[in-house]
Image (tube, rainbow, N blue to C red; front, side, top):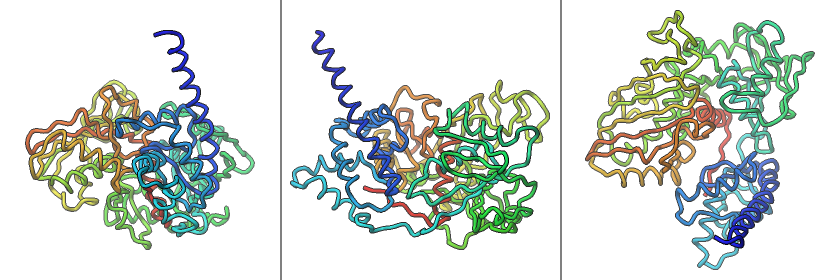
Length: 482
């Protein structure tokens, strides 16, 4: 290859990078001014770098053999930025691919977008929630801090979930400064994208301009949120201390509390919601709700998709799960079986309620699944192995193609992701915003039997599902287009 050819590759890269840089302010303004969240084939573009944008374009080759060029998406984005749009989640990649495939219809980009986005053009389809919903995070551990990151990330005109406070038990020493440090730096998920200031005198944090009150309490019912200007708040309980309606009902005794969402499997008579599957069952007067577990959220969408198309006679779910704070770092007493042994040194067989919990979201699968779990020495990202007996015979190609289409075009596209990579490992999925990612190259099929491997970021991906349930409870409904 001569020097001229080598230079042409570099020039092409430089030009594409410059175009990606032009996209950044347009993406930001659409989000801040219109509440429009942009993606490329499911990959988010909010708070991205130019390199992230180019990588998202490269990802499209998993779905479209010809891929997608920033030369094509930029003109579509420019037209979107000039339109009067209501808050929505728009897939810039799909819109661009659709326009290119419809080119024979002799439409301009604007005409095509007005046709495809008719439901949100010129103020149509506006959000039902007019005033921001106050949110309180009760507990500020792994999930609580990731929820804080996501809520703050969403600050903009379309953001109607407003993080007002966190509730914790007061620790020794510089409590607020230490909690700010844990929010700022994360060994798994990296540094927080923004600025955090500690307001000691006000017992508060100032995070990207968001004033967040820090409230110290030992019991939910002893708090008066109204003294902090918080009213009708959605309380998100991340402690797991109370998991039944009676215990969680303590939150509703606090002044200024409106509803409660548990970020763990619920017990007793309360809705377990897996967004994308049974969130339509959520009623406006449901005041105590569970967002189920990370594993339940990972497997239920895939199980629903498989059952809808092929039927599931019975099956077994084995989760290879990263260790959690519930386990001991080194051998020590633990009330649970085996969990007292060192999490960093052992594979630990333990129980999981995910298989049984499936029935709360998918009653048709009640009694058809068994489950178990192996905790392994990794800090994040887990793997669910679904060993299923189907209602009819199929092939690996047919099954994978079906799941690929579900991931791309169904109502569960936020929940189910799909990869055809032969090189992917667990750390590659850190930060995945989907509930689960189907590893298609590992799929096994033999007649009416199949084995599916579903990766999931049991921290961040689950937190994304929790935020979706929060939006549903608050009355926020974002259309996904196209």
